Figure 1: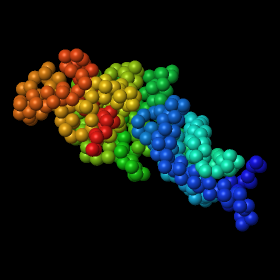
Figure 2 (figure 1 turned 45 degrees about the vertical axis):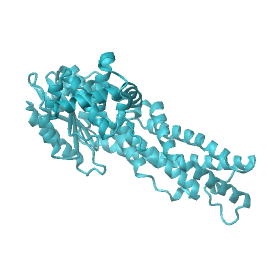
Figure 3 (figure 1 turned 90 degrees about the horizontal axis):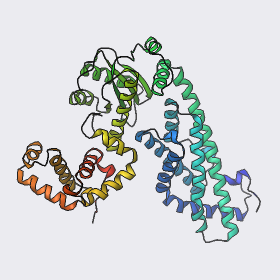
Length: 439
């Protein structure tokens, strides 16, 4: 079978289209409708594939959500094109695809990662087409023509959108690098990347001393439509936290993208633990801002370590849904939870293995889990648990017994696993729980 002309691939070959071509387009639409029913799962699987194949795109949970949004938007657009025979030149790029390209540029992630992501997605999408074409009630020759048509349209769409977002990336990268503070950002990344930067040079360029004590901080916005001055408002939030923490100098702040900033609070001597409740009250006034904190540390190594801890605490906050205004790596249970939050799928499976029926996401099991968690934290004291949870002692006793009855693990057989699993549920909630049976 001869290859179709470009105009025919787009579905607009003019009035002289042969009946065979019209038949192919009808079959394409039928196959695409079947494909569309699977689109949500295809998008999820494709996002996971891209993140696995291109490690530079697996930044954090929030960034992965942007990737998923972009993949979902693009796959929806392709199926829409195929179903309705829409010419590519009439399309407008999706907001999610453009925003993802902007964030990649702002994070200094190489442009080839973006191009590779689209190529991986293209190959995967074409592979997903096969079963739907194979299921058509038509001849083998027609199936071949349908597959050729659909593959060609997908290829042309990916070529168009990848060129567009690459242009967006390049323009944003030039703007971002050219903005005030790019030298500061470069030096910060060099220190974090363990590249050779002298403490003196760093202080001269940034005004911040590496040989002092530091507390790393990450502040981000959960606003779906960030304001043009979002970074300015986030910077103000850093200064408020710095004041609440009693730091002895000006904080170092560097923008990561339009909705995220990294910061370090300086101290002349080892500071006392940060009052996280005070930080929550301070940050909570902004409503859409969230903060994660590392522990205090000293020197260049401490500069890196406290930042890594703030990143780890942020993973926990993002995985649980970002409802808490501030979280610290030093909060009880956050450190170990941050490790488990790196692989939510495996963690979810493990939690179910340990907790059994107690790992179901509903109000009843939530109350049982929390009571058992506090019971273990208090050294298995019914009295202390009742006082902490403002419950009657008999209520605590009932809940603990009920919780252990539903769990597959007992205090006597594996107390550590039970305590850790309950702690993970406390911090990550639905992200590691199974859906309640609605029957």
